[in-house]
Amino acid sequence: MSGKGCYKISDAKGCVSVYEGEFKENMFHGRGKLQLRDGATYEGSFLRGQPDGDACEYCFPGDDEIYQGDFRGGKRSGFGEASSSVFNYTGTWKDNKPDGEGKMTLKSVGKPMVMNGSWLAGDLDGHADVAWPSGAKYSGKFSKGAMNGAGVFTFQDGSTWEGKFIENNAEAAMQS
Image 1 (cartoon, rainbow, N blue to C red):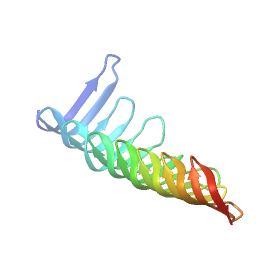
Image 2 (image 1 turned 90 degrees about the horizontal axis):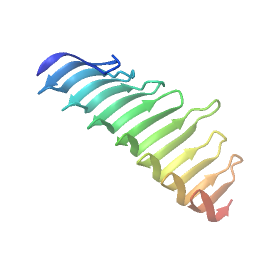
Image 3 (image 1 turned 90 degrees about the vertical axis):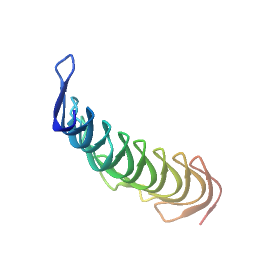
Image 4 (image 1 turned 180 degrees about the vertical axis):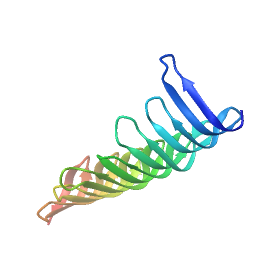
């Protein structure tokens, strides 16, 4: 099958997934919209049956998360933004995880927690700036999501620790 059309997929329980859009060689290929039986929706480009392309949107069932951005091989890859009532991340992705430069904001009742910097496989890794709701801040190196390496931690009262951090702990730090 090639061209445009609508395809319904039913399982043994009668639950239906629906694809409406372009086909090529019996696969979703080109622009289309896929609504899965669990309520998730993807609208954008498909390549050989997988979400793949720019300006795509995916709404996740059971929560309010929406992703708009690039997909490659059915996964979030490239630039995109994910947002929900709990968080917002804008930046680069690889294999469905923040990877590269990006900014994540964790929303809370008061001030949000903001993490801006380098990410690797979903964790801060490299240089980043973090601001906690309490007013504390950290600017420095991270590894696998923990403060590791040279950095400056600023407390709510404005005092600072500057030096080397290992697994979120200050070592040989200088207080000012």
